[in-house]
Length: 374
Image (cartoon, rainbow, N blue to C red; front, side, top):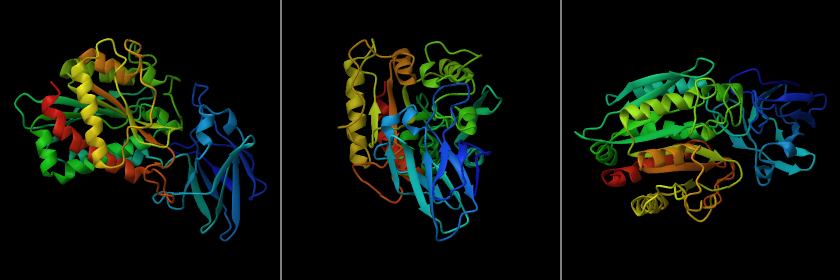
């Protein structure tokens, strides 16, 4: 058996592959950071009909070790159809297995969103008549950071921003953005209602370097971008600096930062209730956003992060910084790495397709709220 991770978003270290029933592996740390949790590798030389077992022996030391409880790894034979495989966790590591149907298979923490698919998504988006490239920044390693402008029809439109994958291992975030582009392609009545009131500004992947490198949390400098919004720099967080400068030039009336959560098996939001400038107007908008999204399907309000006390928000986070700076509705939208306990799908758990459908639901909510953002 050969184990490889020398490709886009690959991450694994091989400790002992001599026994195909008990392959010992370790997750490599993020580039220039102590964080680690994301894994993605290709196993070649599998024997069809034979059980193959894999153990990530350093999982108990990972960034979110409590996240492994109840988690099931994903596998794919073709890189397109991803499914969950039997997985257990104990003090010796994370263990998963596959009775092979083909001679090779990929395994990952979550269904990866590749750079090739990212490039194809941009082509799809820019082929739409209402979508243009507003600006293009650059990551630390020189990868493009496109800002897409979805032009509405209002003479004085609201400006709604959606950014994704600040944390590079949270690949569900760009699957969400693909779902948003799919909704634009449909050109339905709700979408037209939204675009009659608002322009959209989209950053499909905020952290292209980290995603390519197989990082969980940080960019090529080891910086957590979602802790850099108070003081971004060209040296450590040019990705955030680029977006902030574009926001200053364009303005912001609404903001969604799309993420994934390792531990909580639910879809939920975190808002700006702890911001010094949080008002009753923003509280009303937050409540209505959540209520409308609950009605759309795979979203709930019972589970999530503890609410911040008034004035105690961490303004280094994108959601809080944008909400405070622009006095606007701002949310972090979280999706699970596990299944969604409110509507479980055992074969896939939460996956890319469900992330995309959530984006469709968010468009419906934004269409109803856009006119009241100011």
